Every structure is written in C-alpha cells, then in structure tokens.
Amino acid sequence: MPISDKLIDQLLDGCDSPEDILGEAGLLKQLTKKVAERMLEAEMEAHLGYAPNDSAGNNSGNSRNGKTKKTVRSINGDVEL
Image 1 (cartoon, one colour):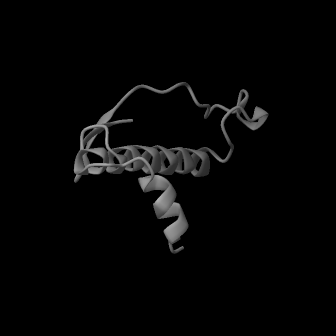
Image 2 (tube, helix red, strand yellow):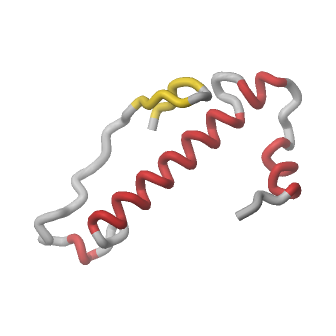
C-alpha cells in the first residue's frame, strides 16, 4: 500500500527541524513505536484467535493476561513498547 503525499504532509506538519523528525522524540521514533505496537497486537490477536476484550477469551485457557513494557532496538534507536 503506497503512502500518499497528503499523509506525509500531515505527518510532517509542525516539523521545523531535523530534530523534530530524527530526534529522541521525533517523528521517526514515534512511527516506529506505533507500527511495532500495532504489529505485535495483530500478532497476538492472530495467535489467540480473538481481539482484546472479546468474550471469546473468557475461560479459554489461553487468555490475555496483561502487558509489560519492553525496550527494543531499532535503526531509529531504542524504543519502549
């Protein structure tokens, strides 16, 4: 799926310096975090066979039991998920 120029413009709106894009709290790090979290949630849903808060998981023996923070390394630096 190609990313539209309009979406790129929206993401870059308010980015006035390289730090806003590449910095510790910059756009690339935020995108890396959001995409990784979305990917991991989709993987968990596929593995368990039900979405978060779905009653299908009640007493299934394979239930979600919470989350803990993790730090992963990316090409954009360490990211806490």
